[in-house]
Image 1 (tube, rainbow, N blue to C red):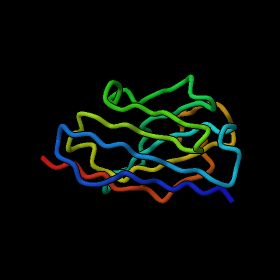
Image 2: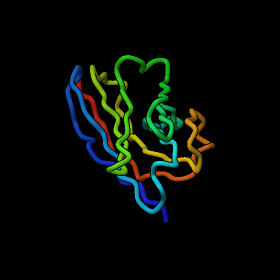
Image 3: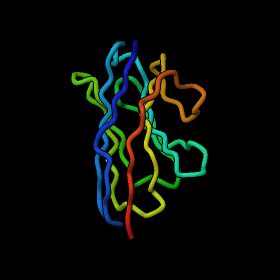
Image 4: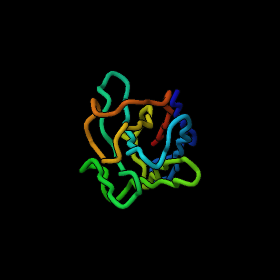
Length: 124
């Protein structure tokens, strides 16, 4: 059973930073591409960022480039999302997700495992 556990969410003022972490267990982490999605109240779950199996390929939602950085530590079975210059519109539940594939993807339906999500709230 694959488990993904997110942490690091919380309340932050606009312009601030947060780093989300996602610890993965139950499957060989280094064989999996990973991603982050987010869902604001009343909206669909949207792509944020993805990273391939060894971390040398990353891809971001266009609107987030330059502010968010995805990374991974295969020795720790953990993927990270560093968020800077946060805006009120970044408020959402952030979900960590994993694929049974080493190749990155921005498509929600191509992910196989999901965490429970962590709330990020950005105040003005």
